Image (tube, rainbow, N blue to C red; front, top):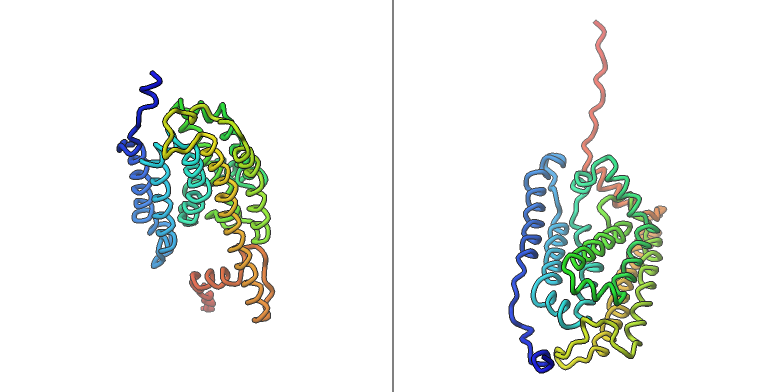
Length: 304
């Protein structure tokens, strides 16, 4: 049995994942239907339902979802390398969610959320404190050895955890780039918020990086892909979590800082007072005035 277990394995043997294809096709079909059929009825006449940037963000989000969920990354992440699992996790939590949020126009968000309990529940869960706690708690739980071992061996648990992680990531990103503008926090607050999001993952990242023994039994197999040992694999995963995930968040923070600084510099040159909230900028006001049609003046009544 040991000889069979140690025999070379063809890790590049193509494995179909029709459930992923159905998911991707469904997302594309629903988005296309919303944009082509519902959108023209939901926006003023002559206005495009979605912008080119939103279409590009949706296409990129679908591409990231497909890359993370299909062959070969999914199979390597589930069967061979924990570092590949970490790369998959980062794609599904840090890259894909903000792309899908940026791809969602306001009219579509209002249609999905409605005006009742669902909207109120999402609003509560998307507040920075609630969203940050839920996201980081799941980051810690999903890297616990018993959870990782169980998820790899149990398909239902595996997909359930992925659904929870992606949902928590969508909520976590909502205060930064969600489609409901008034739910976003100010640019300085976004920078502090994302900094805090980069702190907690360093705990499991450091734990993985400095562990001297394999932590996950399911990845401690006789066949080692590319000759990477189980310890080196989990150390690479820890570094990817700390440097890759943290570096991405810091890159976003840097972009937000330059946006905030540029807004203040422009306001200073023009003698305006800049409002910190991202939802109430001079550019936003100008866009709203440009989209609004002039209200006709009332016609005075004639005395007969």
